[in-house]
Length: 159
Length: 406
Image (cartoon, rainbow over all chains, first blue to last red; front, side, top):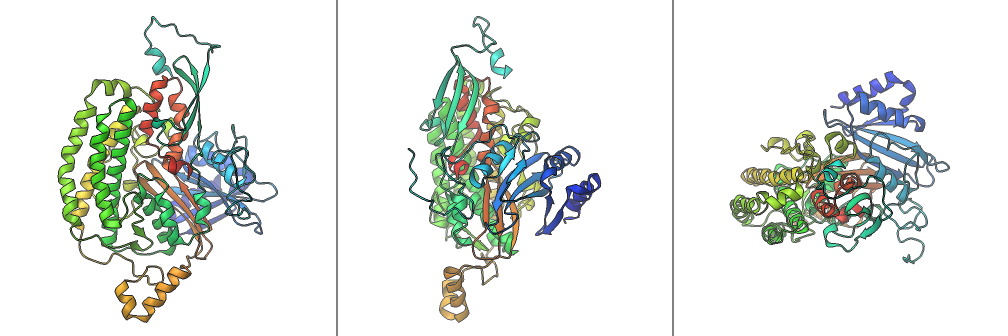
């Protein structure tokens, strides 16, 4: 079932072998791990040549403070023509959780990236308006990080 | 942008350069037509909207954080409170993500009931959209007709699950319980009346010339732009993209049902309106087919370590009692892995990204809410429109703030 998805990854490799670090195939979904520097080029190639025209989701995840690399950003690509889905994953270290923005390719990445920045503290380089989106602008810390306590540090007031 | 400008009669002078008289209007968060607690920062030039900045987060409750501290089965009740007009859709996406990680096989009857109740919920969600959308534009009576019929659906859902707005009806591996006696008869009764109700709604709004002139050519978003903004569901189909995950990435056996996918190419508020009106009829068709397919059978998967045993079994079998205790007290372990489970909710693609590290609690749950993404396209839609059309466009996006803020 996933042969077709592997076909896209093969094309990706043919285009530039440096773009693919690792491939995971589990539960009918293919995840391609992309080096941080290549994400915009990979997305542009997949969008323009392979028909993945819709960025259906972009979300970050924290693997835990002791993990290295600590953060991951998942790009869920979807095609409105052939209806296949592909997950791209970028791994980021805690010291420098920065990745290039894909807002130039998909306008929808704007709010997804803001949300990821807000809740996990992943910075998107080149984003036109990287502000907090769900939490107040004076909120301290990033709430979805594993080392952020569930109830926060102190009673939060709007003042 | 040009659509609204060219509609202005020539006796009104329109200046190209920004006026000193530009004003900023803060609309919401308590404004009734923002459908919840949404605040819009509108930069106005007379009555024209120059720029819009949506301000969200008033309803943020940290649900995604909460999932990480709850067992898998405890997360279901949180999903009810996201898109509170389509709670069964949220339940379905969440339990299906967990089922995919566990690789459970769901029995036929449970699948049919899932389809039946989800389609009823979709009709209910669309009825709220129609009522409030019409109310925003100024047609007040539609609201009462819509809510009367929505109440009938909520009664059906209450009969099945015990909850009107927060059913939590689906469980990982099947359903909470089987449909009650007489459900099929009541459901048939509702469905028999529904086409007539639908034609009442059509009579109330569709042919109304005021309605048409308020919606046609307003909030235009062309096909390519809509894809770039990530619109899904009726909003995308209103922009001429033939995409429905029930057909294109089928789940829960939707591929075996016979239904059409309404697509409109006008790309405006009117097109999105027509798509949703026709979708209600398609949902009605699916409900009819699902009712015919309801055959007696198990409603829970054969997975004793995941699915709660029947009460009766617990009295007779020691192992059922042990399993029950373990599931409730410790939860069940889910094999490590990550999935992205998209479904076609009433507002668009509802995707659940779930990551497991092998324990009884998920490591990360992310909800890709269709309202969140559709709202992000609002500034592009309202730019250059009249301020009165802003509420029409918000209504056509069918947003629910519970899902946007999570």
